[in-house]
Image (cartoon, rainbow, N blue to C red; front, side, top):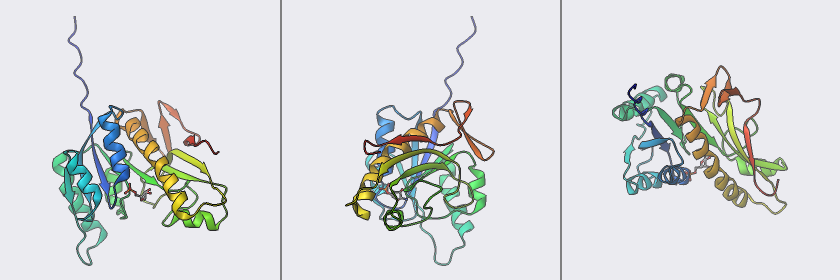
Length: 224
Ligand code: GRF
């Protein structure tokens, strides 16, 4: 009888955060619940005081502060960040509220292995301050998107979206709080798909379980 094939090693995940880290917490909780086919091995932040770093430490995960130096070119920062992550032998990088833009070189190094969560329904409303802009544009629907990171900001192919109806009495705060809860659902899910080898960046598209997605997977809240 042939020997059993060795278990493939669980994907090693780094999560990058800049602030509160509630998305990181959702990833940690999902991992602890056995819902992510991989292991968070490091958390890095450009801000020493990021609450996300504390959350990592509390969970027993290595927490790295890689601050930007004054006037430092983007690619030099990226190189220092990559060097800090090097010992962790990372397979997947998840940007969970990481408020810096990478140079193309780092993005290409992790092509097909880097995810980002964005608080809007891409390709609509890339960039910052999405909740306020959505209300000002009188949109009926809003949400969040997990996408593969490509060199162009917030423009990589979308994998999964969470959608909610915009309410007449919504403020940027109420809408943002609702969207954040949706983010906490879809980021662990997409991370699990990638870690489990179910998700691939194929050319400019996304393959899930061997099929090219015509549109991102959509989860709607009860209001849609
Ligand atoms: C999230 O809304 C994320 O989409 C955005 O920044 C926020 C980060 O929240 N880019 P947290 O740090 O995960 O709580």
